[in-house]
Amino acid sequence: VLKMTDLDLSGQRVLIREDLNVPVKHGKVSSDARLRACLPTIKAARDAGAKVMLMSHLGRPTEGEPAEEFSLAPVAEHLGQLLGRPVTLIKEYLDASLDLADGEVVLLENVRFNVGEKGDDETLSRQYAELCDIFVMDAFGTAHRAQASTHGVARFAPQACAGPLLAAELDALKKALATPKRPMVAIVGGSKVSTKLDVLNALSEKCDQLIVGGGIANTFIAAAGYNVGKSLHEADLVGQAKELMTRVEIPLPTDVVVATEFSEQASAVVKPVDQVGDDEMILDIGPDTAGRLAGLLKDAGTILWNGPVGVFEIDQFGHGTEALSRAIAESNGFSIAGGGDTLAAIDKYGISDRVSYISTGGGAFLEYVEGKTLPAVKALEDAAAR
Ligand code: 3PG
Image (cartoon, rainbow, N blue to C red; front, side, top):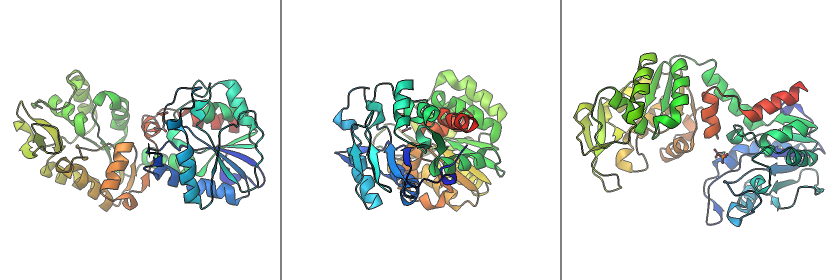
């Protein structure tokens, strides 16, 4: 695909789709990791003398109903601070002729307020395309959506290219998945096997060891024939879990952390995995297991991480996730992490500088790992072929 860095942007009207879908609390951006990730793209376009129009969605508003709670106003404010110059929020931009100065940066209001955005409507896609000379797709986190601002617009814009952030995300994922240095170890945590079955299947073909955590691990523990008591697990997926265990090495916990209630006050007890009581639930991996898995991670050539291995939001159930975080930080292998919970764990344990690549994608990260085609990337390929 064509890249933004290959084009002369000077004096051009450049429309950049970013994923500025960040948490907003009381009218303020509460976590700006995604905003910081796209700053280099915005600065490069600005410094090249482009007339920069940023666009993004925020949340999941009802189309045609521009509710205040989904306005990008707090994002414009925050971006202005990060860029050291105010970023104007433009509310009316369809069919409008925006008159920007070279090097000016504005933000278009939430694209999901526009009727036809989610349906990838052609009329709306053409309206976006008319705003610009060059469309830059940089929103990796939304690249799995075939919507007017991520997909349709690329069909009609005079030129469509990949932004630096999107390109970096794809390069990092390719490095981890297409040509992994061995051994490759993946960690898939989270509550349900059912929502991660495709990712588990895809990784079972690629990695040397597949570490499972959280409710997912409990289903595998049940599949290995142990009692999981009251633990979150999916009895109907035990068969699938057994089948996966025949295809790839899945190192199961030998000890676990249990409690009889799920709360901040709950007392945590370490037990061998074969001694979980009927009234207990497994909320973390135990210290022996954490040590063994940390050893695998330290020696790994490639690590792919999606999802914590315990309820790390509650400190007494976070030791497993912390130990694996430290092992990833100490590993010399190439490590890539993605997903909201994973990023929260990386923040909590302060290892962000020690992970080789932190993806801004949640759903998009998983779909890429599953081997699915990302529609927004396909649209850029098609545009390049035209
Ligand atoms: C995300 O946060 O995963 C992306 O911004 C996509 O948001 P969506 O799931 O509402 O399309």
